[in-house]
Length: 144
Image (cartoon, rainbow, N blue to C red; front, side, top):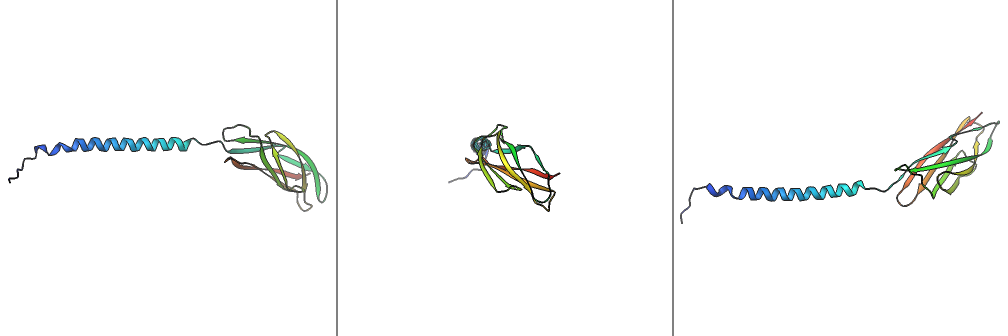
């Protein structure tokens, strides 16, 4: 058997391998772009809670109490108001208060300020199930 040193046909397989590599690379890129498109499509979550009023003024010496009507607005990550939210009021209130509310509902809060303080905070937490999460805000209670 005789071997030749003719290498003219050695390049024939390279373009075929290059085409196969490009096709596999494009398929992998298509799968990656599909995954990114799915990951970017998320559901809305709770983003912001606001109150009206944002501050409460209580007058009096020693421990002072005042029942205040607070309107609570809850917004999702798309800017829409959210209903059926569990809202918890804690901190500078007589007793921890938990209510199921719609955005824009008003609830009476028994705000109080201890005798040794001139300012205090009412912590407000809004929560909704179904993966929407929670968000928080505070109301400042001031002695005047």
